[in-house]
Length: 485
Image (tube, rainbow, N blue to C red; front, top):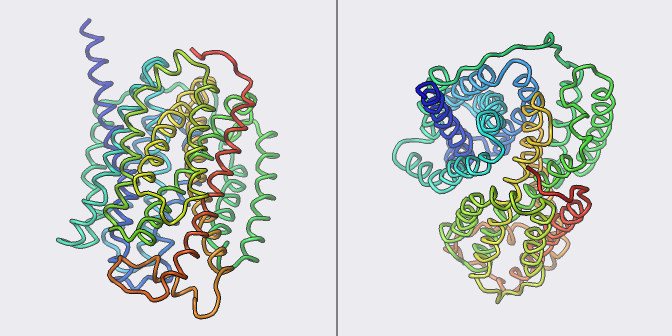
């Protein structure tokens, strides 16, 4: 009994570390975006501002599958501890940055650490809790993500206003030290590798080429379309070479065996596509409300907050839903409801009520909260124990790529549709002024500019609806017709 109690206590020490680590990596995004204008102004970095986020995202995406493989071979504790330490060092260096290029490099270091921390939080939960318990534990851990969405902008704003933007990065240093200490004291595992570690260097090279060319291609989609096309062709070629190599290598970085289960593959694709839908409403609901309804940034931001609250609430019901219903029925029903709600935005006039945006955001939150949590649980359950780390990292990579790729695609759609409608005295910069305006700037010809913005936003959400149709069809073809235990 005493021994069981000790194990139980240590398990919650580990979960405390996981909770703080989840908060630390997720608040990073919300807190930094608040400080971006100050950083760009002080470091004179407007030309490189997109790389403050992209450098972090790129190194996270590249290292995520590598750490997943290492965690399956070397054990979770060592890889997780390494990730936390590197992330903390990267945060400290970012806070010390004297120039924009130094900051970009420090952010890349942060991303190298985050690539281990983010997927391994899910993997560790899978290790220490049973399949029946996981849904509730994941829901509990999701509150760290929800908390970061709520307090991140507030903390960021306070630090920038009362101290300086440097403290936006320093705030994660003590958190990282606490996580490292908790893992060192409370997380012990016995690793018995049954084979010699064989690093798939060529797999790492092709994965890096694939992701770098994809993310650079998406970044240049709107401004340099020919370069974007060339980079996307490189992405396709590198992906083909990666798949070919992984099929032949003895101990591949991303094992093709995982994808032999069509249900597993559908979980990965669903999480990836829904993450692309997620970034659509996160970016364009506030733009719609601020530019066409003239509401404040805070009021527009509350739309995203309402979705986060519903996401958290809904995720607590995932365990009961999985226990009583076939996963494909859950997914198709909720995705279908989300699809109907987003369809209304394609036909929305300028009289479309503000409350309807909150309603759609809340429906979105419920759908995402259930389906994406279910994707995580099932992707871990459908692979052998020795592949849980790799499976979780592939899912995490998919979610990151879904958001990154579609953010670029939506931006390109918005700008292209605006440019196609320009006429007479209505220039792109004048339309940009309306979108950027906080309501204090009086812009002439609003009656001509507003319909241009509305049409462009309609087309962005046509893209969102297409994504939802695709993911709905994919789930219809899930071969599994049984409740998964």
